[in-house]
Image (cartoon, rainbow, N blue to C red):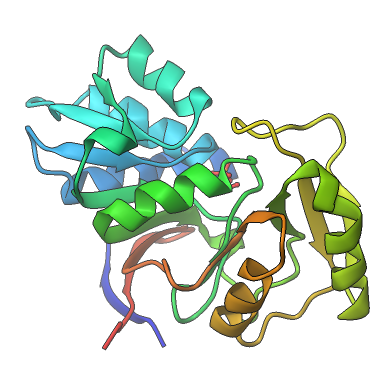
Length: 242
Ligand code: 5RP
């Protein structure tokens, strides 16, 4: 189970403003908090999504910037480029100190569902290069058991019907995501109705199905740390990978 190792104080939205922070403000808060894990002058791994967009903006505001970033999507690359942060190919990098990314769900062990933004395959590739995975998420993403969020799976087109039959056989309700192809040119199958009590076992199983490019369970590449944006500030949750 993750341990809360730090918590910042309450977050003021603005002078004299006592309202609760919006989800986007919580995302901005954790995007900025992740800068504490980034070494100036280093190469950082960058995920994808609206939370990561705040992280990229915070990277651009560092007094001493990073030397560059390895990006997990065209979307993040474009934002990094806009800020003048050099983007390196994952294939040109042998390792990264840290990878920062959001999640669609995160459980008590730091296992995640990812891929709501269809970037799961490149996210897993960049995460695999990194020594440390820092997940940034607002508190709505924290769950006891993964699976309320439909599980994204990137699949080679010709295997889609068979992969969907396999999910139906295990009680899931798969659907091809409409009008979406990944940056790699493949469709995404979203699977509802799964209660993922053993994320590592299910990730291993689905990875073996022919035609599956990547499953959005991040158990083998689970988070080391989660910076969780809450009504009372940023909670830092550390996961024991013993
Ligand atoms: C993209 C992802 C994102 O990290 C996930 O969807 C969370 O996105 P957001 O920060 O917009 O809530 O896995 O493939």
